[in-house]
Length: 410
Image (tube, rainbow, N blue to C red; front, side, top):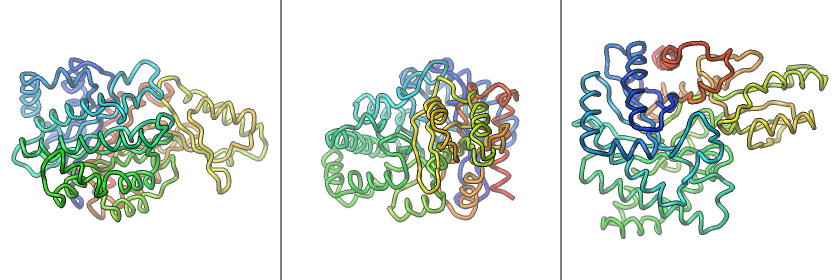
């Protein structure tokens, strides 16, 4: 849905919350869950669909007949697609995903081919005759441990430039402007806003990158530099930024100063545990730690950043952080955990979410145009401890959308 605030951004939710790796499963989710959410959240206006497509699903949807069927359904039900989630390439639910979620990454031509296909699909699904630009969010280069040499970095940049050239040609053919939005995440090659800015300035927004783009497209150097900035940008995930203790205003100001387009903002909250409020004794803090165990599930990575005084201690996954704290209770300070929890639920038992940071971000969005796409993304619903997911999923998603709408309209 479009919101009545600066830039009239489009608000949706990401369908990666619904299990589905095949096109048939994704189609069924759109025909059931998306319609149910629209009825609750936006019954009388067009409603945006934030599609997540695996490579397997995308290969089927790319067929013209299948695309036409979906286009007809969208039109019939006042739905439209302006953004895709192209982060998880393969299976995303029901089995251990962990670090495999980043593969294939931007070192691999398979990621380039997949992203090209997603862009082609999005161009076909976007509403015609509007100035709406599309976005595809993607992995932040690669998982950090997989980037081992300057050659790896150069390969990532080369594939991103090649994709930008594809998006340029796609715009010439279809008239649709699409931006690839890299999504910084803890323990990835692009982990923070500052790291993302440095990568763009050092590898994508350089004269050498522009010349490479010119070689791929035949445009002028000036147009090449402009096109790279139009087709490559950032997806700012509010949970990821909160886990890294980033300040929303500072992050957005830095991106604007660097001329980096914020293609999408993912409206999400992580889990925050303040062990310092549990008492002075180690036994009290360890008792609180014990209540955190149900969140240490085995499907997704739940990176932890602990603030201990003025220092930050990073741990790859929550089970490892819990085990380390049991050995050394001095680590039980303030933890922020990459576990997407419902944005409207300020507390989850003795824990809180990072909603204050999301509120700050939304306050900025309310005052000035920041991004055309706002997307709620609580994909971990089915692995939340049972006591925190007793609400019907469609009702919960509608509540999240309503919570955002209220804060941007009040």
